[in-house]
Length: 363
Image (cartoon, rainbow, N blue to C red; front, top):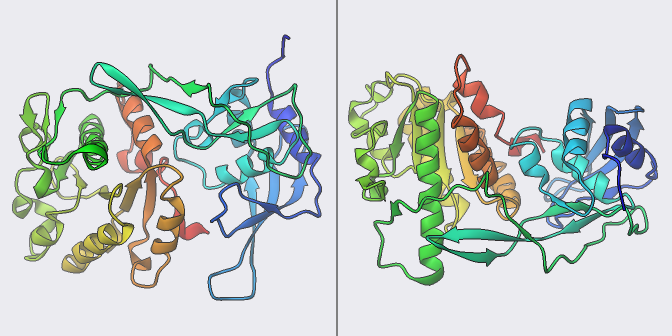
């Protein structure tokens, strides 16, 4: 059967058909917020919604009106094809705090389902099938009841994104004693470090890599030997005058500096196999050792979906709130990497980075 392209008008009308009296749950059960539709402006938006949250340990509800822009609606509509999974986080490249709200409402309409297609990961010359991330899928020939989220089984479907996949076959871990699942987790952690180093290089920045990862090899050279990797934190201009700062920062996974070492666009902890608390504690110690760095951008990079709730909870704890933590999903790191492979001139690297970050403190 032939289908016409899915449009922003189709999307807006689908959400407009939902009951205004209903409060809608997010597909992730651990998410504390819920949504109610206030107004849909046809033909293409914007969509005004109310986000309702009950803070932990409290009875009263926090209500916030937010708007889903026409631009968001158009971007998601352009990515929708019949019977093909769509990763909403990847569509928006980590930007837009309201993208999960838009995905949630669309999943409650009758032609959209939640699905978890497998994903093909390249390991050297071979491939392996890994568990998939959350996607939505448009099934125009198979409607379900509106107002509820249904899951579509897609066991025979895998996502192959050869043009976007990054293979780091030239990476050699400095922790060869690890085996099995531990080794796989460590390799993914190191891959993210390499990607962040290469992104920094493309943006005209230098990078510090955690001291215990200096021995990771990429393209036959240790990370500490890479051209844009800082060799000694004690010699960085931004940390002069703060005797404890180099020691406090030496185990932080990745710190971006400008070429002169005077400004710090990002301080990044990669959380994969360990708890979020350890990374937040390291960054808190770094900030306390150099108080002038309080207004820098502190980032937790972590797998999509799995860590989002945990980061939101920890970032809002009193001892960490002053860090104003941002969340950088792994999919956004890949998006950032692929975009920085292009010739990029005249951009503000700090503002560019922030388009990929989520703000856990926003609710």
